[in-house]
Image (cartoon, one colour):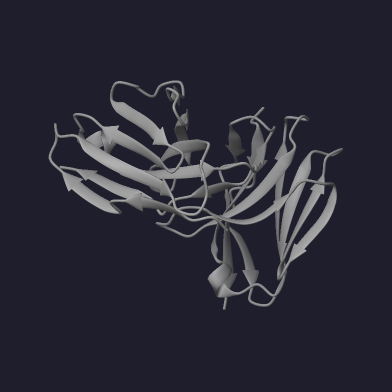
Length: 114
Length: 110
Protein backbone atom coordinates (compact mmCIF):
# COMPACT_ATOMS: atom_id res chain seq x y z
CA UNK A 1 0.00 0.00 0.00
CA UNK A 2 0.88 3.64 -0.25
CA UNK A 3 3.02 5.26 2.43
CA UNK A 4 2.07 8.35 4.39
CA UNK A 5 4.44 9.87 6.92
CA UNK A 6 3.74 12.26 9.75
CA UNK A 7 6.09 14.40 11.74
CA UNK A 8 6.54 14.72 14.63
CA UNK A 9 5.27 11.47 16.08
CA UNK A 10 5.03 12.97 19.53
CA UNK A 11 5.10 16.52 20.81
CA UNK A 12 4.79 18.11 24.22
CA UNK A 13 4.22 21.82 24.38
CA UNK A 14 3.23 24.53 26.83
CA UNK A 15 -0.24 25.99 26.86
CA UNK A 16 -0.55 28.97 24.54
CA UNK A 17 2.07 27.86 22.03
CA UNK A 18 1.46 26.70 18.46
CA UNK A 19 2.34 23.31 17.08
CA UNK A 20 2.77 22.35 13.44
CA UNK A 21 2.26 18.79 12.23
CA UNK A 22 3.39 17.70 8.78
CA UNK A 23 1.81 14.98 6.68
CA UNK A 24 3.50 13.68 3.55
CA UNK A 25 2.53 11.12 0.94
CA UNK A 26 5.82 9.46 0.06
CA UNK A 27 5.11 7.41 -3.03
CA UNK A 28 1.95 8.87 -4.53
CA UNK A 29 0.34 12.19 -5.21
CA UNK A 30 -2.38 12.98 -2.69
CA UNK A 31 -5.12 14.98 -4.30
CA UNK A 32 -7.05 14.94 -1.04
CA UNK A 33 -5.78 14.87 2.51
CA UNK A 34 -7.78 14.46 5.69
CA UNK A 35 -7.07 15.37 9.28
CA UNK A 36 -8.56 13.39 12.14
CA UNK A 37 -8.44 13.59 15.89
CA UNK A 38 -8.89 10.65 18.19
CA UNK A 39 -9.29 10.73 21.96
CA UNK A 40 -8.47 7.61 24.00
CA UNK A 41 -10.90 4.75 23.42
CA UNK A 42 -12.99 6.87 21.10
CA UNK A 43 -13.57 6.70 17.38
CA UNK A 44 -11.91 8.78 14.70
CA UNK A 45 -13.26 12.27 14.35
CA UNK A 46 -12.80 13.96 11.00
CA UNK A 47 -11.63 17.53 11.47
CA UNK A 48 -11.15 18.75 7.92
CA UNK A 49 -10.64 17.78 4.31
CA UNK A 50 -8.19 19.56 2.08
CA UNK A 51 -7.51 19.46 -1.62
CA UNK A 52 -4.21 20.62 -3.05
CA UNK A 53 -4.25 24.33 -3.71
CA UNK A 54 -7.65 24.89 -2.15
CA UNK A 55 -8.88 26.00 1.24
CA UNK A 56 -9.68 23.22 3.64
CA UNK A 57 -13.26 22.24 4.38
CA UNK A 58 -13.80 21.99 8.11
CA UNK A 59 -16.31 19.77 9.86
CA UNK A 60 -18.99 21.32 12.00
CA UNK A 61 -17.65 22.36 15.38
CA UNK A 62 -14.00 22.52 14.31
CA UNK A 63 -12.56 26.03 14.58
CA UNK A 64 -10.73 26.88 11.37
CA UNK A 65 -8.79 29.71 13.04
CA UNK A 66 -7.50 27.36 15.69
CA UNK A 67 -6.65 24.45 13.42
CA UNK A 68 -4.91 25.91 10.39
CA UNK A 69 -4.54 23.55 7.47
CA UNK A 70 -2.34 24.12 4.46
CA UNK A 71 -2.20 21.72 1.52
CA UNK A 72 0.56 23.39 -0.44
CA UNK A 73 1.51 20.54 -2.74
CA UNK A 74 0.35 17.13 -3.87
CA UNK A 75 2.57 15.48 -1.27
CA UNK A 76 2.40 17.78 1.74
CA UNK A 77 -0.28 19.03 4.10
CA UNK A 78 0.28 20.72 7.44
CA UNK A 79 -1.94 21.17 10.46
CA UNK A 80 -1.08 23.96 12.90
CA UNK A 81 -2.74 23.94 16.29
CA UNK A 82 -2.64 27.57 17.36
CA UNK A 83 -2.65 28.69 20.98
CA UNK A 84 -2.85 25.11 22.15
CA UNK A 85 -4.61 24.29 25.42
CA UNK A 86 -4.66 21.09 27.48
CA UNK A 87 -8.03 20.12 25.99
CA UNK A 88 -6.33 19.99 22.57
CA UNK A 89 -4.21 17.09 23.78
CA UNK A 90 -5.09 14.20 21.51
CA UNK A 91 -3.89 11.83 18.80
CA UNK A 92 -3.88 13.66 15.47
CA UNK A 93 -3.87 11.48 12.37
CA UNK A 94 -3.66 12.52 8.74
CA UNK A 95 -4.65 10.43 5.78
CA UNK A 96 -4.22 10.83 2.06
CA UNK A 97 -6.03 9.72 -1.02
CA UNK A 98 -4.75 9.72 -4.56
CA UNK A 99 -6.53 8.83 -7.76
CA UNK A 100 -8.18 5.75 -6.28
CA UNK A 101 -10.74 5.66 -3.49
CA UNK A 102 -8.42 4.07 -0.93
CA UNK A 103 -7.39 6.28 1.95
CA UNK A 104 -4.04 5.71 3.64
CA UNK A 105 -3.24 6.90 7.12
CA UNK A 106 -0.10 8.38 8.55
CA UNK A 107 1.26 6.98 11.83
CA UNK A 108 -0.25 9.80 13.88
CA UNK A 109 1.04 12.54 16.16
CA UNK A 110 0.42 12.42 19.87
CA UNK A 111 0.06 15.96 21.18
CA UNK A 112 0.30 16.73 24.87
CA UNK A 113 -0.33 20.30 25.98
CA UNK A 114 0.84 21.09 29.50
CA UNK B 1 -29.89 6.46 11.87
CA UNK B 2 -26.12 6.38 11.88
CA UNK B 3 -24.43 6.21 8.50
CA UNK B 4 -22.35 3.21 9.49
CA UNK B 5 -23.29 0.73 12.19
CA UNK B 6 -20.86 -1.65 13.80
CA UNK B 7 -21.15 -3.67 16.96
CA UNK B 8 -18.62 -2.15 19.34
CA UNK B 9 -17.76 -5.52 20.86
CA UNK B 10 -15.59 -6.78 22.25
CA UNK B 11 -15.86 -9.83 20.06
CA UNK B 12 -13.90 -12.62 21.66
CA UNK B 13 -12.83 -15.70 19.70
CA UNK B 14 -10.37 -18.48 20.50
CA UNK B 15 -7.15 -18.76 18.58
CA UNK B 16 -7.64 -20.64 15.31
CA UNK B 17 -11.34 -19.82 15.03
CA UNK B 18 -13.05 -17.67 12.41
CA UNK B 19 -13.80 -14.12 13.49
CA UNK B 20 -16.78 -12.54 11.77
CA UNK B 21 -17.15 -8.77 11.80
CA UNK B 22 -20.21 -7.08 10.39
CA UNK B 23 -21.12 -3.61 9.27
CA UNK B 24 -24.26 -2.02 7.85
CA UNK B 25 -24.47 1.28 6.03
CA UNK B 26 -27.31 3.59 5.17
CA UNK B 27 -26.26 5.28 1.92
CA UNK B 28 -27.38 3.22 -1.07
CA UNK B 29 -25.13 5.32 -3.27
CA UNK B 30 -22.04 3.89 -1.59
CA UNK B 31 -19.59 2.53 -4.10
CA UNK B 32 -16.42 1.59 -2.27
CA UNK B 33 -16.06 -0.30 0.98
CA UNK B 34 -13.05 -0.67 3.19
CA UNK B 35 -11.87 -2.48 6.29
CA UNK B 36 -9.19 -0.94 8.47
CA UNK B 37 -7.39 -2.45 11.42
CA UNK B 38 -6.31 -0.22 14.29
CA UNK B 39 -4.07 -1.44 17.07
CA UNK B 40 -4.26 0.38 20.38
CA UNK B 41 -2.30 3.62 20.23
CA UNK B 42 -1.67 3.31 16.49
CA UNK B 43 -3.31 4.74 13.39
CA UNK B 44 -5.66 2.72 11.15
CA UNK B 45 -4.20 0.45 8.50
CA UNK B 46 -6.10 -0.49 5.35
CA UNK B 47 -6.43 -4.26 5.13
CA UNK B 48 -9.18 -4.84 2.57
CA UNK B 49 -11.28 -2.97 0.05
CA UNK B 50 -14.17 -4.24 -2.01
CA UNK B 51 -16.21 -2.58 -4.73
CA UNK B 52 -18.43 -5.36 -6.14
CA UNK B 53 -21.03 -7.63 -4.63
CA UNK B 54 -19.72 -10.95 -3.47
CA UNK B 55 -16.58 -12.14 -1.76
CA UNK B 56 -13.01 -10.95 -1.99
CA UNK B 57 -10.27 -12.99 -0.42
CA UNK B 58 -6.77 -11.94 0.61
CA UNK B 59 -4.84 -14.44 2.66
CA UNK B 60 -6.74 -15.13 5.87
CA UNK B 61 -9.12 -12.24 5.24
CA UNK B 62 -12.36 -12.36 3.24
CA UNK B 63 -14.52 -9.31 2.68
CA UNK B 64 -18.14 -9.87 1.75
CA UNK B 65 -20.36 -7.20 0.23
CA UNK B 66 -24.13 -7.29 -0.23
CA UNK B 67 -25.33 -4.01 -1.64
CA UNK B 68 -28.99 -5.04 -1.71
CA UNK B 69 -28.93 -5.65 2.04
CA UNK B 70 -26.46 -2.82 2.64
CA UNK B 71 -23.99 -4.79 4.66
CA UNK B 72 -20.34 -5.61 4.43
CA UNK B 73 -18.52 -8.16 6.54
CA UNK B 74 -14.97 -9.25 7.24
CA UNK B 75 -14.04 -12.83 8.01
CA UNK B 76 -10.70 -13.62 9.58
CA UNK B 77 -9.78 -17.28 9.31
CA UNK B 78 -7.38 -19.01 11.69
CA UNK B 79 -7.51 -16.03 14.05
CA UNK B 80 -4.28 -15.21 15.85
CA UNK B 81 -3.69 -13.21 19.03
CA UNK B 82 -1.94 -10.65 16.80
CA UNK B 83 -5.30 -10.03 15.11
CA UNK B 84 -6.59 -8.51 18.35
CA UNK B 85 -7.38 -4.92 17.40
CA UNK B 86 -10.25 -2.62 16.54
CA UNK B 87 -11.63 -3.11 13.05
CA UNK B 88 -13.19 -0.12 11.31
CA UNK B 89 -15.44 -0.45 8.32
CA UNK B 90 -15.76 2.49 5.99
CA UNK B 91 -17.45 3.44 2.76
CA UNK B 92 -17.18 6.08 0.10
CA UNK B 93 -19.78 7.34 -2.34
CA UNK B 94 -17.13 8.47 -4.75
CA UNK B 95 -16.89 11.97 -3.37
CA UNK B 96 -14.12 13.32 -1.21
CA UNK B 97 -15.24 11.77 2.06
CA UNK B 98 -14.91 8.32 3.45
CA UNK B 99 -17.35 7.56 6.25
CA UNK B 100 -15.98 5.46 9.09
CA UNK B 101 -17.75 3.29 11.60
CA UNK B 102 -16.84 3.47 15.27
CA UNK B 103 -15.15 0.07 15.08
CA UNK B 104 -15.49 -3.39 16.56
CA UNK B 105 -12.94 -4.53 19.12
CA UNK B 106 -11.72 -8.05 18.45
CA UNK B 107 -9.96 -10.12 21.08
CA UNK B 108 -8.36 -13.40 20.08
CA UNK B 109 -7.65 -15.63 23.05
CA UNK B 110 -4.49 -17.72 22.96
